[in-house]
Length: 230
Image (cartoon, rainbow, N blue to C red; front, side):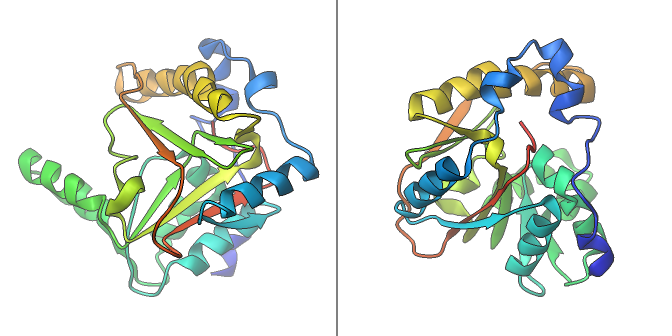
Protein backbone atom coordinates (compact mmCIF):
# COMPACT_ATOMS: atom_id res chain seq x y z
CA UNK A 1 0.00 0.00 0.00
CA UNK A 2 2.92 2.36 0.59
CA UNK A 3 3.55 3.18 -3.03
CA UNK A 4 -0.13 4.10 -3.50
CA UNK A 5 -0.36 6.50 -0.57
CA UNK A 6 2.97 8.17 -1.38
CA UNK A 7 1.40 9.74 -4.49
CA UNK A 8 0.73 13.47 -4.02
CA UNK A 9 -2.23 15.43 -5.40
CA UNK A 10 -1.93 15.70 -9.15
CA UNK A 11 -3.55 17.87 -11.77
CA UNK A 12 -5.41 15.88 -14.39
CA UNK A 13 -6.72 16.69 -17.84
CA UNK A 14 -10.01 17.68 -16.23
CA UNK A 15 -8.70 19.52 -13.18
CA UNK A 16 -10.11 23.02 -12.67
CA UNK A 17 -6.85 24.67 -13.69
CA UNK A 18 -7.17 23.13 -17.17
CA UNK A 19 -10.84 24.03 -17.63
CA UNK A 20 -11.26 27.51 -16.18
CA UNK A 21 -9.97 29.54 -19.12
CA UNK A 22 -12.85 28.31 -21.28
CA UNK A 23 -15.34 28.15 -18.40
CA UNK A 24 -15.03 31.82 -17.49
CA UNK A 25 -15.31 31.25 -13.74
CA UNK A 26 -14.19 33.39 -10.80
CA UNK A 27 -11.76 31.12 -9.00
CA UNK A 28 -10.75 33.89 -6.61
CA UNK A 29 -14.28 34.01 -5.25
CA UNK A 30 -15.37 30.39 -5.40
CA UNK A 31 -12.20 28.41 -4.70
CA UNK A 32 -10.44 30.25 -1.90
CA UNK A 33 -8.56 28.54 0.90
CA UNK A 34 -10.14 29.38 4.27
CA UNK A 35 -8.17 30.17 7.40
CA UNK A 36 -7.87 27.73 10.31
CA UNK A 37 -10.61 29.41 12.33
CA UNK A 38 -13.08 29.06 9.46
CA UNK A 39 -12.16 25.42 8.94
CA UNK A 40 -12.61 24.63 12.64
CA UNK A 41 -15.97 26.43 12.71
CA UNK A 42 -17.14 24.56 9.62
CA UNK A 43 -16.03 21.15 10.89
CA UNK A 44 -17.93 21.72 14.15
CA UNK A 45 -21.06 22.74 12.23
CA UNK A 46 -20.89 19.67 9.98
CA UNK A 47 -20.37 17.29 12.89
CA UNK A 48 -23.35 18.87 14.68
CA UNK A 49 -25.39 17.51 11.75
CA UNK A 50 -24.25 13.94 12.55
CA UNK A 51 -21.67 13.78 9.75
CA UNK A 52 -18.24 12.60 10.82
CA UNK A 53 -15.35 14.76 9.60
CA UNK A 54 -11.77 13.57 9.22
CA UNK A 55 -9.52 16.57 8.58
CA UNK A 56 -6.32 15.82 6.68
CA UNK A 57 -3.44 18.05 5.64
CA UNK A 58 -2.55 16.56 2.26
CA UNK A 59 -3.92 14.50 -0.60
CA UNK A 60 -1.55 11.74 0.47
CA UNK A 61 -3.10 11.68 3.95
CA UNK A 62 -6.59 11.77 2.44
CA UNK A 63 -5.94 8.76 0.21
CA UNK A 64 -4.56 6.79 3.14
CA UNK A 65 -7.64 7.72 5.17
CA UNK A 66 -10.05 6.68 2.40
CA UNK A 67 -8.32 3.34 1.92
CA UNK A 68 -8.39 2.72 5.69
CA UNK A 69 -12.14 3.46 5.77
CA UNK A 70 -12.88 0.73 3.20
CA UNK A 71 -12.77 -2.76 4.77
CA UNK A 72 -11.20 -5.80 3.15
CA UNK A 73 -13.53 -7.27 0.53
CA UNK A 74 -16.07 -4.43 0.78
CA UNK A 75 -18.50 -3.64 -2.04
CA UNK A 76 -17.45 -0.20 -3.30
CA UNK A 77 -18.78 2.24 -5.87
CA UNK A 78 -17.87 5.80 -6.71
CA UNK A 79 -19.33 8.57 -8.78
CA UNK A 80 -17.04 10.50 -11.08
CA UNK A 81 -15.01 12.91 -8.96
CA UNK A 82 -12.05 15.04 -9.98
CA UNK A 83 -11.07 15.22 -6.32
CA UNK A 84 -10.92 11.42 -5.99
CA UNK A 85 -8.74 11.25 -9.09
CA UNK A 86 -6.46 14.03 -7.86
CA UNK A 87 -5.78 12.26 -4.56
CA UNK A 88 -5.01 9.01 -6.41
CA UNK A 89 -8.06 6.92 -5.54
CA UNK A 90 -8.33 5.65 -9.12
CA UNK A 91 -4.85 4.12 -8.81
CA UNK A 92 -5.66 2.60 -5.41
CA UNK A 93 -8.84 1.07 -6.84
CA UNK A 94 -6.96 -0.36 -9.81
CA UNK A 95 -4.35 -1.96 -7.57
CA UNK A 96 -7.12 -3.11 -5.20
CA UNK A 97 -4.86 -4.56 -2.55
CA UNK A 98 -7.76 -5.07 -0.13
CA UNK A 99 -9.84 -7.18 -2.51
CA UNK A 100 -12.75 -4.75 -2.81
CA UNK A 101 -15.73 -5.73 -4.97
CA UNK A 102 -15.63 -2.85 -7.45
CA UNK A 103 -19.17 -2.16 -8.67
CA UNK A 104 -17.91 0.26 -11.31
CA UNK A 105 -15.81 -2.49 -12.93
CA UNK A 106 -18.88 -4.74 -13.05
CA UNK A 107 -20.91 -2.01 -14.77
CA UNK A 108 -18.30 -1.18 -17.39
CA UNK A 109 -17.80 -4.87 -18.17
CA UNK A 110 -21.50 -5.30 -19.01
CA UNK A 111 -22.09 -4.89 -22.76
CA UNK A 112 -25.89 -5.03 -22.70
CA UNK A 113 -27.11 -1.43 -22.35
CA UNK A 114 -30.31 -2.32 -20.49
CA UNK A 115 -28.47 -4.54 -18.00
CA UNK A 116 -25.78 -1.90 -17.56
CA UNK A 117 -28.44 0.71 -16.75
CA UNK A 118 -30.03 -1.62 -14.19
CA UNK A 119 -26.64 -2.23 -12.55
CA UNK A 120 -26.01 1.51 -12.40
CA UNK A 121 -29.30 2.03 -10.57
CA UNK A 122 -28.43 -0.69 -8.07
CA UNK A 123 -24.92 0.68 -7.56
CA UNK A 124 -26.16 3.67 -5.55
CA UNK A 125 -27.02 1.18 -2.80
CA UNK A 126 -23.46 -0.14 -2.54
CA UNK A 127 -22.07 -0.88 0.92
CA UNK A 128 -19.56 1.95 0.44
CA UNK A 129 -20.19 4.78 -2.00
CA UNK A 130 -17.52 7.43 -2.56
CA UNK A 131 -18.18 10.89 -3.94
CA UNK A 132 -16.81 14.39 -4.21
CA UNK A 133 -18.91 17.36 -3.12
CA UNK A 134 -19.68 20.65 -4.82
CA UNK A 135 -19.98 23.04 -1.88
CA UNK A 136 -19.83 23.21 1.91
CA UNK A 137 -21.42 26.03 3.89
CA UNK A 138 -19.75 27.30 7.06
CA UNK A 139 -23.10 26.59 8.71
CA UNK A 140 -22.55 22.87 8.01
CA UNK A 141 -24.73 22.02 5.01
CA UNK A 142 -22.99 19.83 2.43
CA UNK A 143 -24.26 20.30 -1.13
CA UNK A 144 -23.96 18.04 -4.16
CA UNK A 145 -25.36 18.42 -7.65
CA UNK A 146 -25.20 16.66 -10.99
CA UNK A 147 -27.07 16.18 -14.24
CA UNK A 148 -28.81 12.82 -13.85
CA UNK A 149 -28.46 11.88 -10.20
CA UNK A 150 -26.01 9.03 -10.84
CA UNK A 151 -23.54 10.61 -8.41
CA UNK A 152 -26.07 12.06 -5.98
CA UNK A 153 -28.50 9.12 -5.74
CA UNK A 154 -26.48 7.40 -3.05
CA UNK A 155 -26.31 10.43 -0.76
CA UNK A 156 -29.72 10.67 0.96
CA UNK A 157 -30.28 7.04 1.95
CA UNK A 158 -29.31 4.35 -0.56
CA UNK A 159 -25.65 3.73 0.26
CA UNK A 160 -25.00 1.90 3.52
CA UNK A 161 -21.88 4.03 4.03
CA UNK A 162 -21.22 7.32 2.25
CA UNK A 163 -17.65 8.61 2.08
CA UNK A 164 -17.34 12.17 0.80
CA UNK A 165 -14.00 13.71 -0.15
CA UNK A 166 -13.42 17.45 -0.51
CA UNK A 167 -10.77 20.13 -0.46
CA UNK A 168 -11.34 23.00 1.97
CA UNK A 169 -11.50 25.31 -1.07
CA UNK A 170 -15.17 24.31 -1.38
CA UNK A 171 -16.10 25.99 1.90
CA UNK A 172 -18.23 29.13 1.44
CA UNK A 173 -19.80 31.47 4.02
CA UNK A 174 -23.50 30.63 3.69
CA UNK A 175 -25.90 28.01 2.37
CA UNK A 176 -27.03 30.48 -0.31
CA UNK A 177 -23.38 30.84 -1.38
CA UNK A 178 -23.13 27.05 -1.59
CA UNK A 179 -25.97 26.95 -4.12
CA UNK A 180 -24.42 29.84 -6.05
CA UNK A 181 -21.07 28.04 -6.10
CA UNK A 182 -22.76 25.10 -7.79
CA UNK A 183 -24.29 27.32 -10.46
CA UNK A 184 -21.50 29.85 -11.00
CA UNK A 185 -18.39 27.72 -10.55
CA UNK A 186 -19.01 23.97 -10.55
CA UNK A 187 -21.45 23.90 -13.47
CA UNK A 188 -19.37 25.92 -15.96
CA UNK A 189 -16.32 23.75 -15.22
CA UNK A 190 -18.31 20.51 -15.43
CA UNK A 191 -19.86 21.73 -18.66
CA UNK A 192 -16.37 22.15 -20.12
CA UNK A 193 -15.32 18.69 -18.89
CA UNK A 194 -18.44 17.06 -20.35
CA UNK A 195 -17.94 18.73 -23.71
CA UNK A 196 -14.33 17.55 -23.88
CA UNK A 197 -14.99 14.06 -22.53
CA UNK A 198 -18.36 13.25 -24.11
CA UNK A 199 -18.94 15.87 -26.79
CA UNK A 200 -22.01 17.20 -25.03
CA UNK A 201 -22.64 19.87 -22.40
CA UNK A 202 -24.00 19.53 -18.88
CA UNK A 203 -26.58 21.15 -16.64
CA UNK A 204 -27.77 20.80 -13.05
CA UNK A 205 -30.63 18.34 -12.95
CA UNK A 206 -30.47 17.34 -9.28
CA UNK A 207 -29.36 18.92 -6.02
CA UNK A 208 -28.82 16.99 -2.80
CA UNK A 209 -28.43 18.87 0.48
CA UNK A 210 -27.15 17.06 3.54
CA UNK A 211 -28.93 18.96 6.31
CA UNK A 212 -28.96 16.32 9.03
CA UNK A 213 -28.11 12.61 8.99
CA UNK A 214 -30.24 10.21 11.04
CA UNK A 215 -28.03 7.11 10.96
CA UNK A 216 -25.06 7.32 13.29
CA UNK A 217 -21.74 6.72 11.51
CA UNK A 218 -23.24 6.45 8.02
CA UNK A 219 -21.57 9.51 6.47
CA UNK A 220 -17.90 10.47 6.69
CA UNK A 221 -16.43 13.58 5.11
CA UNK A 222 -12.68 13.47 4.45
CA UNK A 223 -11.78 17.16 4.36
CA UNK A 224 -8.39 18.11 2.92
CA UNK A 225 -6.42 21.31 3.49
CA UNK A 226 -5.59 21.56 -0.21
CA UNK A 227 -7.21 23.11 -3.26
CA UNK A 228 -8.77 20.11 -4.96
CA UNK A 229 -11.51 19.45 -7.46
CA UNK A 230 -14.20 21.94 -8.36
